[in-house]
Length: 177
Length: 105
Image (cartoon, rainbow over all chains, first blue to last red; front, top):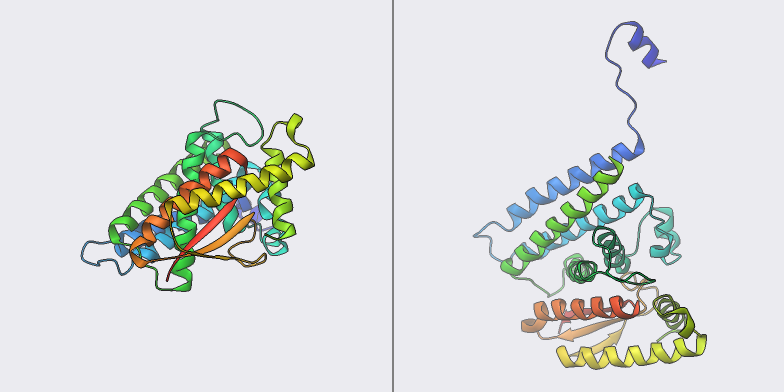
């Protein structure tokens, strides 16, 4: 009704935003905020104080990009959800499966030389390793235990996480627009 | 290891194994061998006291085998890297999802 009134009055009619478009916007905004926040957290002079939190934030960006990419690319999340009602209901995956999902997506970008069930490319294996490390540091950051990470190591993890987000998201946008 | 975790691991090994050798009996033996090899490899790269994470723990949902590993503070960063690389190798090779979470003693 609103659209027809707008059209009749000559106003520009904005097409309704689809859930997919909203998801894309949200992911891109979260990643952009992550880049800004982690840059501040890891500024020279801040020492190691915020490095763990920066890595944690970068992990959640990877989480969001991986799950959203899977949803947009039409990948069934069920095999990654381990029949967990909470994760099924929320279109999410348990933390232990984020490295599996991210490496699955990386396997699409860099297919393994030999095909077959469970075959992984070296890039997919490296992605698993990176995301698993981020996942472990995220847990330590969430629980605020005695674990710490140096600013130097934190910067390396955050840079690699940003690069991974960029790769996976670019692949997704190339395929879904 | 719990029955549930063992069952999941056998399923993953079956998926990563050529069909001709993927009988139930073979997969049980293979999971035991893979588990032993993983622990030996883990002990070769990081020392520390290990505790099992129980099925249903938020951070172990979906892992086939999950542990906490108590390490000295100075070894924490290296332990995160080294265990993650080892887990990635075992996942690529056998499809088994090990999870070792280093914690500072």
